[in-house]
Length: 351
Image (tube, rainbow, N blue to C red; front, side):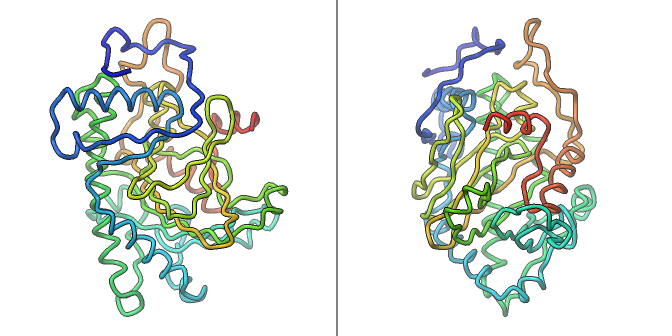
C-alpha cells in the first residue's frame, strides 16, 4: 500500500488483519520537519495499514536526539536506585495521582489476595495550567528535590515537553491516515489528559511466569496512543492477529508507538488497541518510559465519520475522556495490575 485511496475510505466489517511477525519502522520526519504532502500521504498509508494489522510500530524520524534516550535510562535508574523509604517521600497520594507507586499499587496491604505485577512506577505530569490540573483531578507532579537528584527534574520536564510536541505531529499523521483534515486532532491534544511514567522492572524469575506473574501482565492501553521508549534489555511482547505473542526488541533511538482504547473507539475498531505484556527475565533491572497521549478530560469520544457507514454502524456509545480514563487508572493503581476494559477482558479469555 503506497498511497491513500479515497475509494477505500469506508472501513467495512470483517477487514482482514495480517499476522505480523515483526513490527515495521515508520519514519515520521515528513510530519516533524515539514515534508511535502506526497511524502506525508506515503507515511499515512503505511501508518494506516499497521494500525489495522496490529496497532504497534517503531517510530523513527521523530527529531529527539539519541543522547536523550541514554539520559532517560540514566535518570530513571538513578531514581529507582534510591532506598524505598526515600522513594516513599514522593509517593502518589491516591489512584491516578502523580508520584511513586510501589509494587502492588498505592496501597499494597489492601490487595493481599492478588498477585501484583513486579514493577515500580514514577508518575509524572507535564507542566499544566492551574485550570488544566483542576480539570484532570490529578494534581501537580511530585518531583524529587534538586539536591537529592541533581538534574533529574529539569531533564524530565524538558523531555516531556519534547514528547508533547511529537504528539501533535503524530496526531496529524493519524488524522491523514483516517482521511481527515491534518489538524483534526489538534484541539483534542493541546490540553491533554496525559501522564508520563517511568516503569522499573526488577528481574523476574522465569518460574514465576508459570504462576501467571508478569513484569506487566497482558493489557491494552487506555488513551489515544502511547509513545514508549525502552532500554536495551527488552521483554516487551505484543499479540498479533493470529493471537501469537511476538517480541518487540529495542531498536536504538526509536520509540514504540501503540494504539490505545480511545483511538480504537474513535475509529470503530478499524485501528486495533492490542494486547501487550512485559516479562523481564534478563537477570538485570529494566526501565521503560511510556508517554500516554489522550484528549483533554472533557473531550467527547465518538465514532469518526470516516470509520462508519450503513453497513458498519458505531460499535461504542460516546464517552467522556476523563471519566473513561479515571475508572481504568483507579483500577490499576489500587490493584498493582492493569485496569481492564470490558472489551479487553473478553479478548483475554482467548489468551
